[in-house]
Image (cartoon, rainbow, N blue to C red; front, side, top):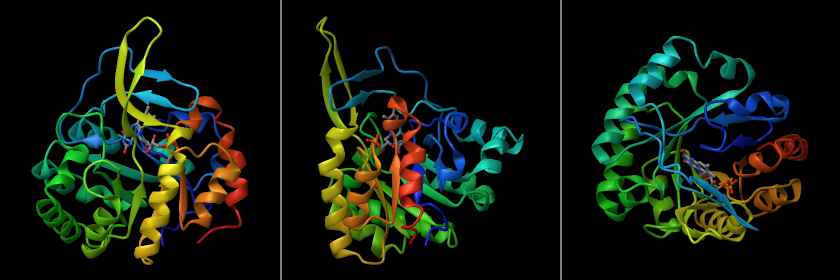
Length: 278
Ligand SMILES: Cc1cc2nc3c(=O)[nH]c(=O)nc-3n(C[C@H](O)[C@H](O)[C@H](O)COP(=O)(O)O)c2cc1C
């Protein structure tokens, strides 16, 4: 079990590298996932990078991050110490291909004990390489899961999955077979937003529109794999959303897009989950 109380997590991405800690009551939070760090640095995508629809947010931020070397340098220099003092931290990792996932694992290995878990992002839809495309070659991906397990035998490993690529139930099966502790369900789904001026934004959909998809993913994976720790992600905007995810088998709830609407939602959900710690 992931020792977090309450079982409420800031999802990777919307919270950046701890920026929201100043806007939320961290006592109501179990852990904070940092934005995905990739093997190579990734630069800013072109504007518009985000748009809000009635029931969704769409973004094409595309895993913008400093890359693992700069990230580790900042970690060593203590730039993230403020986050560690206030809450438990989950590291999120990504890469362009299977080799980069191994190389980034080797680089972070000496530092993983600072994190309560390491989440591998196998599902970003906003990239041309890596992301959910990795799971398409399921055998190679399964071997990668096994190698990461060998490299980090004692770390709480979470695989972040999406509904694109192979069936999520099947993907969770590979994660289970590789002896990983859990899965985070789900990442954003590719979508298109049409601006009133006709400009098109292609990106990852998040927010309330994802909730029924994510609920079903949690339900299906829990039905098959009792041992896997499941972090739910997708459209959690209220305490009652969180209750629904717990009811279908989630062990922990993560909140992403709702932070943009009202960071106070963390306190509401955290209080709700105070008594549901698993
Ligand atoms: C602006 C933004 C950036 C994101 N960046 C990442 C990321 O770096 N890594 C990742 O695993 N997921 C990322 N996500 C996906 C979220 O972690 C989450 O899985 C998804 O948004 C669904 O949850 P939500 O509806 O609560 O936002 C991002 C989402 C948004 C909205």
